Amino acid sequence: MAFESLTDKLSNIFKNLRGKGRLTEEDVKTALKEVKMALLEADVNFKVVKQFISTVQERAVGSDVLNGLNPGQTVIKIVNEEMIALMGSETTQIAYQPGKAITVIMMSGLQGAGKTTATAKLAGKMKLKGKKPLLVACDIYRPAAIKQLQVNGEKVQVDVFSMGENHSPVNIAKAAIEHAQKNGHDVVILDTAGRLHIDEDMMKELQEIKSNVTVHQTLLVVDAMTGQDAVNVAKEFDEKVGVDGIILSKLDGDTRGGAALSVKAVTGKPILYVGMGEKLSDLEQFYPDRMASRILGMGDVLSLIEKAQNEIEIDEDKSKKMASNMKKGKFDFEDYLESMKQMKNMGGLSSILSMLPGMGAKMGDISSMIDDKQLSQFEAIVLSMTPEERRSPKLLNPSRKHRIARGAGVDIAIVNRFIKQFEQGQKMMKQMGGFSKKRHGGFGGLGGMRFPF
Image 1 (cartoon, rainbow, N blue to C red):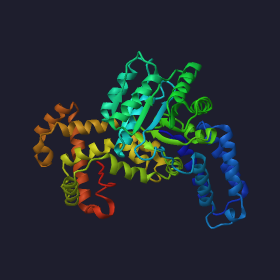
Image 2: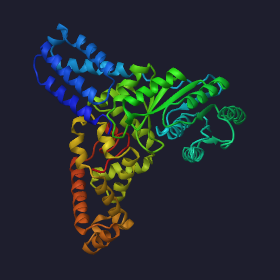
Image 3: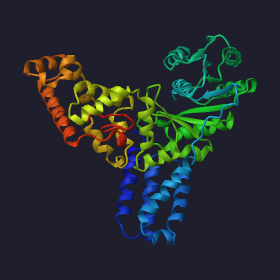
Image 4: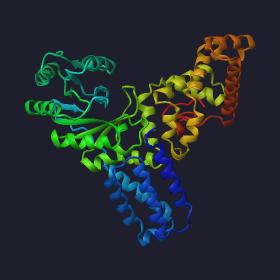
């Protein structure tokens, strides 16, 4: 997960700061030297790190900080504020044309950065907000690029305009805007061609589109996993074509996160969205304050709540019934399957835990305990039960358990262990009486989300 290593290092540094009753100027400088090394190892731009540390140090060594009641906490607060400023301070939205005027957005980026996927994800987001976007296939070079856009467009239920591979991107863009005007689309998103590296042909094509069509927003998709290369790419695109905003893809991958912390400071261009998974719904609005909070191990509960509210379809009657069952200790295997479904929709258990306050530094230990294969086995076990067995676990005698083990393809010992753990969980729920839905949105949940643990 992005930033995991950086979060661990910063959490340890801040833990040492908080452990001291009083701070000296030397304490602050020593801590910031460690912060500097952690940021550089996370592939944050050297000049950005130098300026960041200088600003934090200037604010942190003042007498009002060092002589305050909570000097360690104050220094952390300063680091948090400066990190937010580094990434843009305020959340930037896509600027749409007023009234019924069509907004034309040109997507750009190198091949392999995930541009076409990000384009469809963006269109899906706009559709949810009441817009009627039109995806336009302007990549006439890469094999299957048009088909990929059409498939993704269908998944997010957004229309795709294509003229095949025998027309110029400029003419395709012009025709698409005419099509949008006739069919009531208010946003046109041009999916342009990428290359494996920046070259004159690609830049010339983008410039020609902008010269012949009124482009209101030029967005650049960069691969967060490429670190400082992503920042360099953004800088060059902006200088040659002009960029209004950036989408960071693959931020959920094995990335050190340096691009997210550097790109705004180096290019002056805001990050609009971040890709946090492979699903077409895994595109998150970029909030500098929430990202800083995640990086510093303070969690991101607001984003977690939004995920629970926006991405999970919850049947209200089913939700009430599940909450009631939990209070009575009657949470059955049907409820368990529903919980698993909801958890998957939110990106899995690791994704949920990473957003909870204080979990950042512990994620390394917890990740080793979260076995996706084991969770899949548990799901297979429940799916191998009959509907009656799921609703009445007391029916599970030895012969039924053996049948379930064969159906799930697991050893009988795994089935027995899982059922025993489930029964223990039922007892615990009954003892706790459940949390008030009014206060917590359901047992162990956020906005109706319930976790299978």
